[in-house]
Amino acid sequence: MKTLYLIRHAKSSWDEEGLADKDRPLNDRGKRDALKMSEHLAERGVKPDLLISSPAVRALRTAEAFAETLDFERAGIMVAERLYAAEPETLFEVIAAVDDVHTAVMLFGHHPEISAVVQHWLPDVDHMPTCGVAAFTFKAKRWADVPKAKADTASLETPKKIR
Image (cartoon, rainbow, N blue to C red; front, top):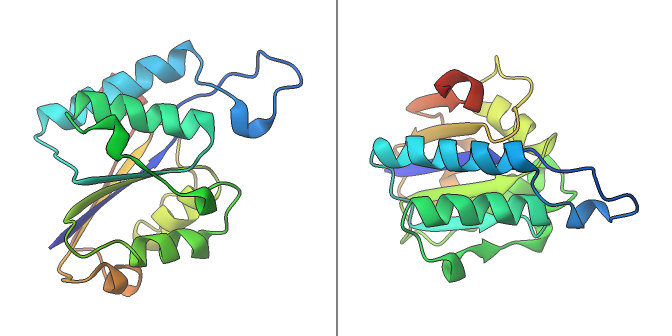
């Protein structure tokens, strides 16, 4: 059994004019939402064994907030350069390349590619909100099989839903 969490980074700041897109930090709401969503998952007993993040500051800070709340070593977060300004197919490739020793993986990325990948298993979701968490389980032994597998369970949680 494999469990995949697809997480769109929390709300970012546009305050610093001239700051490169990749360097934009989380704003106050983003920090609150990342804490709230990660605490929600912790209350449900979620224990990821791998976190993969885009290198963009806003995605990595979201992943770090989740790591702290979910008792995951921050230094263990895998930063995948390929996840920034990627195509949805790239996300499927990153998922398929995960080492099979891992059973619960969280991937932190951006819209529109996260939304497109979520829509692959949840067709009614056309837009992942910031800090939205889509969770999927698969009866797969290998991550390489997940991109083409049918999800056994699928859900979407958002900061607005858990307020």
